Image (tube, rainbow, N blue to C red; front, side):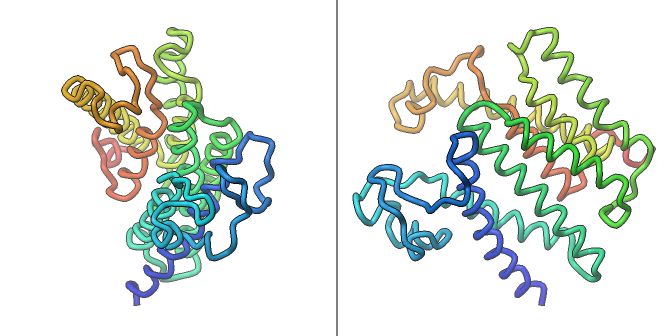
Amino acid sequence: MIFITGIFVFIFGLIVGSFLNVVILRYNTGTTIGGRSYCFSCGKTLHWYELIPLLSFLIQLGKCRSCKAKISWQYPLVELSTGILFALTLLSFPVFSSRDLFILFFYLIIESILIVITVYDLRHKIIPDALVYTFAFLSLGAIFVPALHATRYTFYDLLAGPILFLFPFFLLWFISKGRWMGLGDAKLSLGIGWFLGLAYGISAIILGFWIGAGVSLLLLLVQKIAKGKTPLISGLGNLTMKSEIPFGPFLILGALLVLFLRIDITGLANLL
């Protein structure tokens, strides 16, 4: 039964992922989210059968049916990632009651916001205030709704947002005047603290730093070896130790890993 339900949740995730792509591409462009989808190359309005999540991209071999222009890999990757993430959420937080269903939908909403933040930050190297504030205040509000708690919250968890916001992110941003760390990352840490609580929030931040440092060093190493000779490496530009790399996606990945695996690096979860 859980397998069949997981398939439906995965398909639901594909559909939501398709919508998230629209939000990512149209956010802050002056284009309404409700408008008809069209090809960015030829301007042709797309039919419904050209908008089937994942399948349309595969059937059309990643090209527009009219002008044969290549379709960005962002579309299938966001759809597939959302589907997988939604299915993993169901497996991690199975539904046995109406309360469990409430928790599941809350997590799916939060994850949808985090997916948009991740891809938008990768594309534009900025985290939109409206999205990060929505994530933060939903997470804060959930603290006062016991039905949304998969785990027990404490008074320390209420302070987790401000603590993780001020230390180290806001201080890093303030001291470096934005050169080391963007203020958007600090705002994101505010929501992560309230979403996961103090102990797990700290673990998510630490994981985010580790993953970010590892990926950055790996990209520098690969670029040095390849010397920009491959399309993938050439597309990254000339990376150096001073290059600006979006940090929000690493924080979000750390938060999701902690959410699913309950990683407690500091051991604080057993103390608080």
